[in-house]
Image (tube, rainbow, N blue to C red; front, side):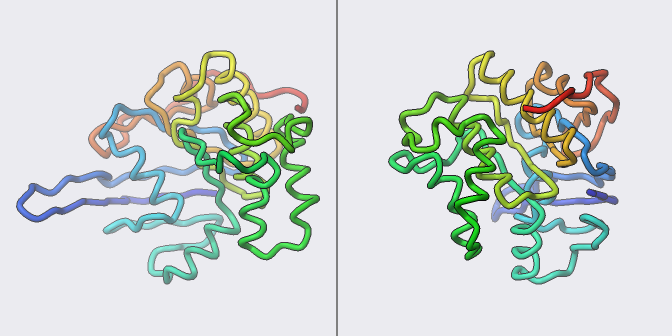
Amino acid sequence: MIELKDLAKTYRKPKAPPVKAIDRVSLKIEPGELVAILGPSGSGKSTLMNVMGLLDRPDSGEYVLNGRPVQGLSDDELARIRNKLIGFVFQAYHLLPRTTAMENVQLPLLYADRKDYQERSEAALAAVGLSDRKHHYAEELSGGQQQRVAIARAIVNEPAVLLADEPTGNLDSVAAREIMDLFKVLSAKGTTIVLITHDRDVAKEARRIIRIRDGAVEADEPSGAAPAEGGL
């Protein structure tokens, strides 16, 4: 699903030394894998996520997404691929607080001019176990429930890839467990999930851990975590 070869990205600012955010990163992520990219602050993991999510362009190297090389494509082409294949989940949720859970989930469908937005949004909320909260405003939901709404919004277009940047960082241990269990179920159903984190305990929940430091991969190994069983 994702193949990177010698990917590099350097940030340059006037009167400041260049910062090599990604340094010749090569890796492959198969369809349905749940992978954690683990590293401290400033290690380059968020830049790597932005490149994988087609939000940023590498300076050099190759990126093949779902069998298609994406370097050299126009911004409009990248946006179409991103809308079709990729969902994003962020630590801060990014929900509209005075809008219902249902309305938050429907936003990507409305921008895409989908006519079946009602059915799809209800199915996405059901998938994350929040059918009974669909008419609650986001500000009325707990942190764990808000993150579930954010995940429902990310999967409502049925993306092949889900990129999650520190999705449990603002949650207590119980809510974090619920989110990780949900990711495991989504992975078991075929969604490729890349989890960006600095938390070793969270990373251990993935089936595979890619450790990154100073923009380079220093280790890529199975975590030993058990796969999900059953459904939601």
